[in-house]
Image 1 (cartoon, rainbow, N blue to C red):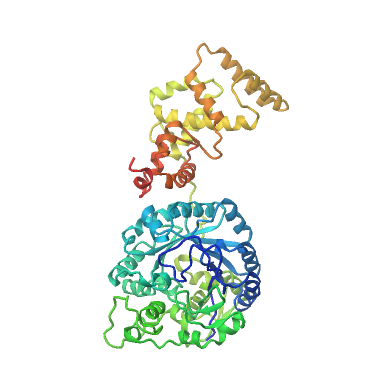
Image 2 (cartoon, helix red, strand yellow; image 1 turned 135 degrees about the vertical axis):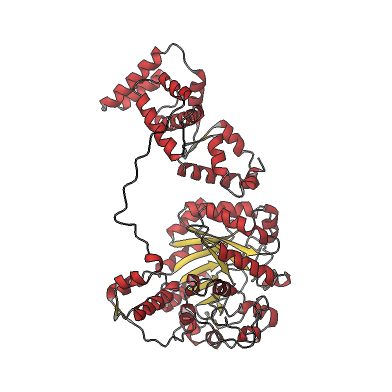
Length: 608
């Protein structure tokens, strides 16, 4: 069987700006790398060799802190130009709008940022630097806003194990594509740390299985936790995730690591040299290393060698090495106890990893091959095996795009919308309270129809049963804010007759707009009594330079009560979610509507 590296983790530097308690390469708080670190030109020479073995591989650039490498952008651009899918594993503290934008321009696909707790004390202590949580959160949001896919990475420790559901909720709310739960391997600086118990390990894995469908658009993925496959099998022998890449250990079979000095190891947590890229090509090491070969035909010891899940799971080899000094020993952190030597359970995933399938390969049409080649390389072999199994079961001689679609779970790899879906029902008109309707009589005749239409639209967007006085005021304030922003674009900076005249000059070629301005001026001049409160509010909106949405003074006051380390994140999130809900002005009510949906609202608002 040919073994292809789907993912390579590369510690491109040993320099780092933090001092994390569990760091497996003992990086931290050093401005320069260690003397043995590869130079940039060495890195550039190695990259083509990786692409030659698998041009679609996922290249995880990490450290240390990858953003601390002086040539990070050049390295990313080179790797991306070779067809590699580049992602960064980072603490996020050095990410900002400018650096995130540049990473995107260099072809980086996404970033994984470590957030170990929403409690500043826990996270900062674990990461060895005060203020690191706040900086990491800002960096994560900067990456998201630059168009990079974001993943939140949390290491499960005793101090945060009960908080994992909360961190997952937060990750989903900010738009993370994955929430990765890492399990500690006591190596490097983490050698003296105490891992969570096997029982806690089991508890977290069962939670991850239970909530896997609770966060649309975000995967919950245990990492360095091959036991997750056993949990899934015990839950459902036909569980769809059993036939995926998720959770299983790929060390030496479809995954490896390159350390800062260019040495290849089976995974980041094992300093077991498989080859040196200063003197050898990556392809020669990958295909010819006796060290890596051990993982491709594993002879597991202890209970792992007896276990029915030895192919599906196989235990964490790094944890066995850290505890016993034997990478083929048993993983003591697994709670499962085999009853003698059990028959090995196999699946499409185990065949993709170790081989063993006796069925001949099917014939693929060029069109079907083109489709499957668009699937990410790390999942392609598993999908191919699943489709070929489906074709044999149905007696198909040739795999076509139609059969590829039929073999996909839940009706398709991309689920199409029904062609004959019924047209949406016309919404019924929302009734008005008498006092709210009476207030509209104060508006000019030519404005009133627009008010009625807007109130129906906003009411439907926000699920209103009636249009009352408070809701009318809220939408009025939003509308004033929007108008003020449009006025500023046309040159308005104050409320005066000179401004109206300037507007007429600007739109002199548009008779309709000039007529509208004349009617507004005529209406204002004809009013016996001016509403000074409204005029003052309108002036405040003209002075507001907020680029996205407006904030009322009361809402701004509420925002200022959010703890400082969460304030920027809260502001960004509230503005984003308010726009989704149709709010153009953030009032106290819209502030509450957004915050009430957050499970961590009290934490962010200081209990307000």
